Length: 390
Image (cartoon, rainbow, N blue to C red; front, side, top):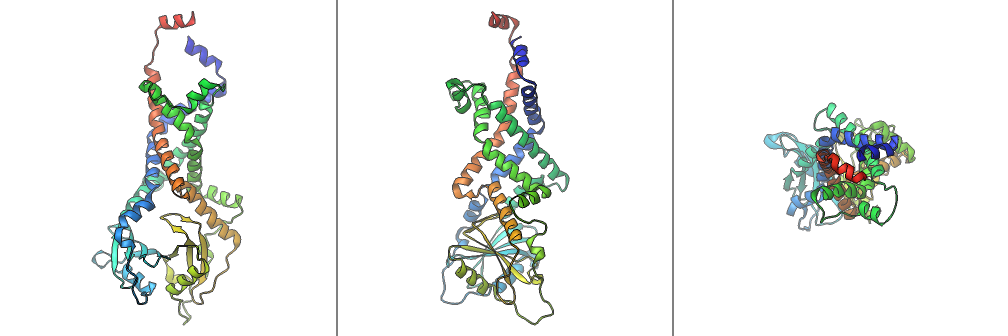
């Protein structure tokens, strides 16, 4: 009777909101746990990759010139198992003279790897396939590694999670603000029974994670849906109609001109941007390109860069190539979206907040299900109800 009375007192909007929050959560719960967990695993990928690189990250500075980056790249390309070619997607050099050169490459059967090379001797110090683990986790996170259908399953689940977060905030919001409701809304009663603690873990932690959770969900949808991504870029004044690589000049294959040495180009970039600590050059199909396309930044991560500057240099003259400001802005907006999504937006603090938020988001479908099961099991007798009504 009390339950029926409380239901009647609630508005139609409140009942629909509660119904959606419950049944959408139950419907997509397992998928949401999986997506949130795999996303959480990726947050500290750069730190883990630095750790697994070990001593290969560093070298002893020698009193001789470094080998040409082109030669180092050729050596890495021919370092695959059983003589199979290795595809090199980019090269990263660092301002610190004690750092080795890092190549990101792909070979079979190992998959994605970071290859660390001594720039003086050309010796391959380490081929670290830890990056392939994060490559697999990222594809599980985005599409269950199922081509086509997998991405749609994840995308629909992400939209559901967006609804869950918004409806959860509405459910959390107290009708009256007083000491009792503030304590119930912001504090976890650790000394209470399991049902109460579980409810608080769902209700209170869900609120604390809601703002960052919304950020992660919205940026995930921006990344997933190209029309949304393009609309976001345009909204902030960028141009995403064509990727920057497609508008750059192609290689002049009929010309006898020689390409500028990569080492010289990198040295010039560090001289122009003394505050930056790393340069990443994209080397995939470099022979077909008429430019060197680089990201100059304080830190180069697996998927995003800190305080990046995009630099495009003519391959033959070494002079800077002017790029449309809106196109460049589109690249920076894209990087910002990735920074927000991966937690690199405020260094280690941003990563910690994102990691904790990921753990909470992983737990929400589980604690929510336990709340529902607890309510299903609770069946008060008619005698208790009558006493309550007296």
